[in-house]
View 1 (spheres, rainbow, N blue to C red):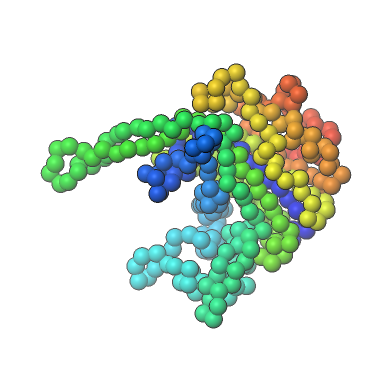
View 2: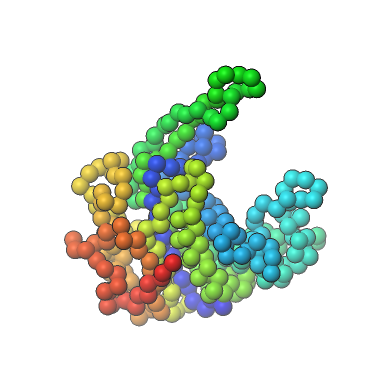
Amino acid sequence: MINSRQEILFIYDVTDANPNGDPLDENKPRIDEETGINIVTDVRLKRTIRDYLYSYKGFDGKNGKDIFVREVESDKGGIKDGKARARDFGEKAGAILENAIDIRLFGGVIPLPEDSITFTGPVQFNMGRSLNRVTLTHMKGTGAFASKEGAGNKTFRDEYILPYSLIAFHGIVNENAARETQLQESDVELMQEALWMGTKNLITRSKMGHMPRMMIRVVYKKDNFFIGELQKKIKISSLIEDEKIRGPEDFVLDVGKLLEELSLHSEKIEKVIFIADKALKLVSKGEEVDLNKIESIRLEEAVY
C-alpha cells in the first residue's frame, strides 16, 4: 500500500512528430499561441501508460490483469461502452479494483446497475508543457490510395509536426486516494516503467520520434508533504533560439534549482528514483552534474 506522498517529474522529447494533435483544429499539435509553448494533455500520457501495460506487461484481460479503459469488441459488434466493461467484471467495484491497474492508478467512473461509483485517481498529472518554444511545420503528402476506384491520382494529405519539443510532465501520487483504490507500490513501479518504456515504444506514424530523457520519482516520508511544481524548477539553456533547437546536443538542462529543493527537504524524503538519458546534459551553477554523485540526496538509479 502507498503510505506517503510521491512526486514525479517526467521529461521526453519529440522530433519531427506530432506529440498530441487537437481533433478540433485539423489535428495540429497543441500550442499556446501567446508563448509558443507546446502542450500535451494528461490523457495522452495516460494512454501511453495503458498501452504499454496492455501490450508488454500482461494487462490484457487474462490471469486477473486488465486495463479497464481500452477498446474491447462487443459480441454484438462495435466497441463495448463503460456499462458493458463493468459487466466483464461482474459489475462489482471490488473486482474492478482488484484486476484493473488503470483504475487503481487513475481512478474512474464505474457505471453499475443501481448507481455509478467514482474513484478519485491517486495518480494525477498536469498538462505537459515544452521547456522550449516550438515551431509548427506544415507538410503535404500523398496518400497510399487513389481518391476513388479507377482514378489515376492519389489523395493528398496535410500533416502538422513539430521539428523539436522537449516536454515536461509533473505528477502526484496521493496516499489518501491510494487507500481508496488499493494502489500498491508495485503498481507505481509498473507505471514508472510504462512512462519510460511506453514512450520509447510509441510506434504509430505520428508518434515516431519520441524519446524519454529524464524521470525523477520522489518518495516522501511524511504524509501529505510534497515540494510541488518540480517542472518549474528546471530550465533549458542554449546558445541558439528555442525555435532552432533540434536535439539534446543544442542545449543543456539546468537542474540546479531542483537539486537545491531536494537537498533542502532531504530529511522529509525517503528516496529519489531517477533515470536520465546519456544524451541529456545536466548542469547546476554552470557545471555539469552526474546524478549518481549527488551526496546530499538519497538517489537510486532505475535501469530498463
